[in-house]
Structure formats: C-alpha cells, structure tokens
Length: 423
Image (cartoon, rainbow, N blue to C red; front, top):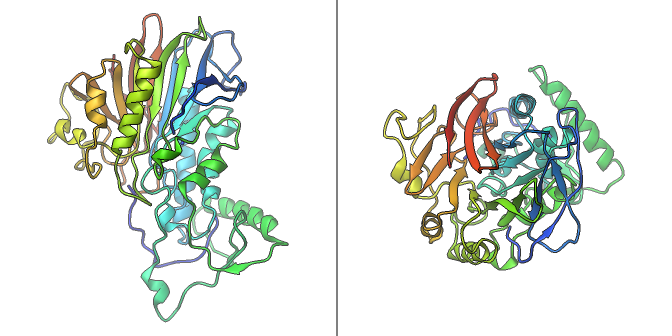
C-alpha cells in the first residue's frame, strides 16, 4: 500500500508466474560476502530451458532468504523529498544484506509506486530497487503488488493557473527529460545527478513526443527484470493473465540435486490494473501443479504473495501481539484482498504448506498460526509508502536433515527480533 503524497512542490524528476514443465536453470554467482562452496542448493524454474543454475551456499550454512516488501520506489518523484526516500530504502537494503548475507532475495510486491511515476518506462525505478541485491551477486525473484502497475494519478495542482509541467518524453525505452531540479537533502543531489546524466545520455539523439503518462504494465516490468542473469522471476501461464507473477521454484537438497527440499510458490494477488484478488483459476493452477510435483505432500511448501487473504483478519491480534503470535508492530487493521476464491481452502488442506508471507500492510509485522500453517507479514522495507515505523526485512532460514523453517526480522539499525520456528 502507498500513501497520498503531498504534491505542493511538483517538479519533474527521473530519479513473475507458473510453469508447465520443470527444468533446471542457472548461472553461478559470487561476491565478497558469498564465497563459492561445494555445498549448494539448487533452484529449478518451471520452464524447459535446458540450462542449469546453481545457487551456492556458504559452507556449513543454512539457506537464508531476505524479504524486501513495499519499497515504493518512484513515489512522489516530482517532489524534493520523493527521491530521497529511495536513497534511504537502498540504505536499508544494504544494511540488511550486509548483516544477514542471504543466499536469495524475494521482492514481495509494491517495488514501485507506479501511480506517481510520470515516465512511460517505470523500469528505471525497478532497476534501482534491485540494485543492492544485484550488485552483490545475490539471485532474487519478485511478485507483483497493487502499486506496481497502478494507473498514473494526475495531481490536481497541475490544472491550476500554473498548468501542467513542461515535460517532453522520448519514445518508449528511454526516459523523460525535464527542467533542472534543486535538492535540499544530502544524498538526493548525488542520486538526482546520476539519474539525470543517465537520462541525458539515453535521450541525446532521440526524437521526442509530448506526454508519457501511460505507465508500464506487469508484462513489460517483468520482461525488463528477467533480462538480468540473477533474476529467477518468470512469466506465469498466459491463461491466468492479467495475473502475471505465478510460478514455483524448487529448492533442492545439497546432497542430491534431484531431491527437492522445499517448493517456493509465488502468486500474483492483483491490484493496480485489475482487482485485488487471487482468482479461482490461480487456485486451480496451484492445485494441479502441486499434485504434479508434490503429489504425496511430502515436500514442504512456502507461499508468497503481496496482499493478505481474508484469513489474516481471522488471526489478527486485537491489540497487543500475544502468543502464539510473534511480532513487534500491530498498528493497523488487515487490508485484505477483495474476496476469497478458493486458494486458502486448498492451502489449509495441504499438510505440506508451512507458511504464507505477504506485505501490503506497512504497520503489521506479525506471524500467527492459522489451522495447520502460519500466516506471516514481512516488514515494511522501503521509505516510500505510508507510515513512519522503523524499516527492516523479514528473514527466512531453511535447513535440511532434518528440514526446518524459521524466521525473524532484521531492522535497519541492525537489531534482530521476533524469531519463531514455523515447522
């Protein structure tokens, strides 16, 4: 969820998916914090590529995943303070990645605030959001939220006597140019200068056309993301569209690449360009795929989407967070999907499903048991979006022999809290 920005100083600034077949996809990666080791966990993407991707684990370590939720890059991009939020969000991610050194990152929706982004190609902001992970050589996957392809919201002040700002936009694939900006905050100047220089290079010799407020749809955002070798996101079945980010990844045992250790399911919970919902078609897709690859429910399954289901309202703490729930903030009501179309009924009746992780509500970070599984929020990571609660990220840790799943929250100040076992 985002916030309604104060646009009193508007200026122009530039500052996914389910598959039918299983094959292994991959490329090795390394960084100063992630050393190559013989012990590995493999991911399998549900598409027939014929290639293999290895995601090396640090020797003797469990498999660790960081969840970055509700970054809201590009929010209030035409104000003095908007781009500075993105600088702060990058700082949070850098801190978490340095403290936790995860093996994998999941972007849990609302990566950008498309309804504030004037340029046709919002992927510029998406690139900024994934840069801390990509720069460290850590692989990642993403799922869409309700703000990622939300229609542009025209500011009322543009229709005052001052009129609409003078902006000229190049063809799709490049970036808008605009009058010079001023910056009052340290850090914003450097970001603005970098973005302006990049935009200038891209548009120097291009012909321009007036107005580019049409935004960037889910398929185009995903197309631009998966060009990167580190992305494990992929398109879901076309028959589920406009829902796009529906897919599954297989975590395989380090002892035997053919032996699945866990399945990670990603579901598009809608919003933005279409209703906030997981459809009955998506539920059927999950049912068919899970029976195909995990018919006896022997392998643990972990689920990720952005907007909480209505089941979250059932378990939500009333005031303070008390056991068996675990968390640190409970500052708002659950803002759930518009309706329940069958996915929760399927999940609660599969003994292999251990937990569901969502974002969307910035003022909630709890995990609560629900029948035989756990319903968990991530932690608001980005400085974009509503709320002034301290930022952080939820961490998941998977171990094998025996399998276990536990989670905690790592804060931007380095503190860790709310650890709980989910299996």
